[in-house]
Amino acid sequence: MNNLTQRKSPSMNSLIEMATHGHYPILENEWINTIIAKGKRLSESDKKKAQKILKRVSEHRSLERQKTVIFSMSEKERSLFIKAFMNLVEGRILDEKPHLH
Image (cartoon, rainbow, N blue to C red; front, side, top):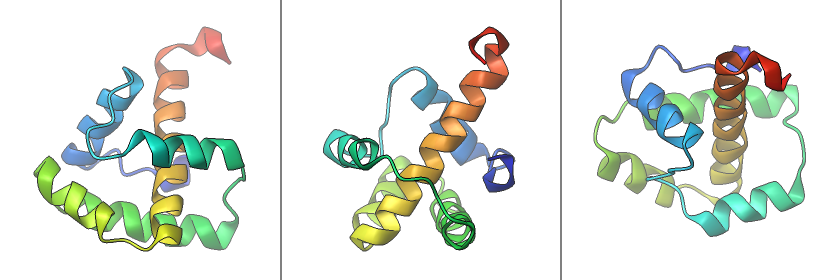
């Protein structure tokens, strides 16, 4: 899902990098587990909404500010963010380890 990439953003880039190593400083494990358990894919309209949400989070440089933005989101927005973010992380892992394809 490379059309969702915010890889050009230094702050999003570092968050993705940390996540590839299992560290999610701006997300609660409970949120991630809930989203993964549901396992739904993003629709095209959800992808567009998620892109805007990713951009909104990446505009903030500090982890605290990013965390504040995420905590202030509605549950639906946060769910879209997490799904999109996890897709970016998965894409990064697959880019770095092509033998996992």
